[in-house]
Image 1 (cartoon, rainbow, N blue to C red):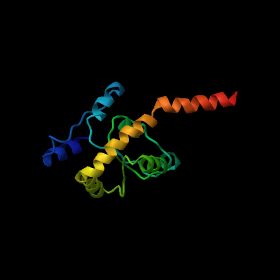
Image 2: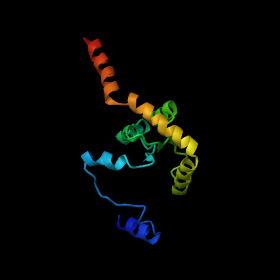
Image 3: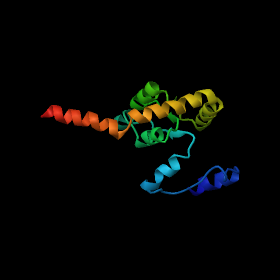
Amino acid sequence: MQDLKQKTKALSLSNKVIFTGRIPLEKLMDYTSIADLGISLEKDSNLNYKYCLPNKLFDYIQAEIPVLVSPLIEMQNIIQKYTIGSLLRSHNPAQIAMQIQEIFNDQTQYSVYVENTKKAKKILCWEEEQKIVKNIIENLK
C-alpha cells in the first residue's frame, strides 16, 4: 500500500487517486454511485472464477454505472445481453488504461451503456429474482 501511495504522489495523481481503506458495507454504495466506470478484473484461474458473478457487478448496474469486466462466462453473458459495458481484452495495465480511455472517448457509446444500465437494473435485482425463487419453491411442493 505504501508503494502505491508513493507512486501516486510521484506521478502527481493525488488529486485523482484516493486511498480510503476498508469501507463499511452501508457506505459502499455512496462511493460506488459517484463512479463513472465500474471495473471487475477477475481472472479465469479456477472454476469458481470462471463462472463468477461478483456482487460489485450488480452494485454497478444498480448505480447505473457502465462496466469494464473480465470476459468470464457469466459476466460476459450479462454484458452482451444488456449492452452495459465492455469486456476486458487483456489484464496488462497499459491495455486496461487504453481500454478505459476508449470507453470515455466514445461518449455516444458510453451514453448507450448508461441508458442500458437503467433498463438492466429493473431486471437484475432482488425484486425480480425473488419471483423466480418463489416459483421454484412452489413447484417443489
